[in-house]
Image (cartoon, one colour):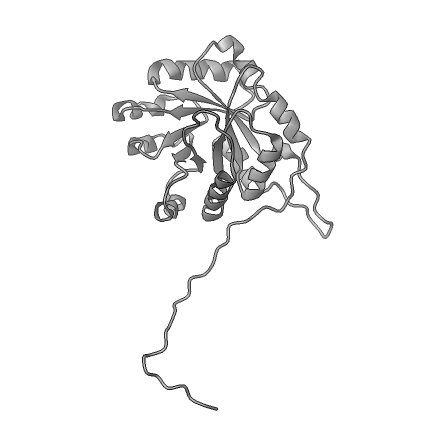
Length: 251
């Protein structure tokens, strides 16, 4: 199983629960909200600085051959975290070669060819837009993917809003699969705590010089509650209406 998917699944479940009658204590935030450093292909000598503080590294891949080589070099340079490839604008012919990628997990948009299913050795994270309608949203749990990333373009002065929180919470409450979201690089630890309470298991942040070290330190100082908003599963019972004109018997 993918190492990152294993970590994400544990985080989404809220971590191990205490045994016995003793009241549960908050779990270390390191076992909860995961930080994923998103990178573009660059100098491998500085990659350790860019992913410092991250739980995983994610390289944006648009040229399968060249970028896959960079991904391999990154994972060798920083082997203590799992690495994934974020597939961008790739043809069906290139998708057939994704099986050759030496990585722990892949992120791919919903428009990706089904040929990616040929690779059973890596974790699969489906990228969807926050505007996905409820009908399609309900089908995701039945798909052969391990997690979901709520993506979207971060243009201009992008920041998290109450609308984002409602959308992310709706996804987390509607899905049994772990949910990741893409957030701005200036995100604050207090905002991550709110996302955690809404059901988000991890965030993808564009990494800069110095990586996510300061954000990790700020997150580690927070107290994350054990109890999170759980997905509500309701039984659907048939509704039987009274026949038209039926008389109500008086007592």
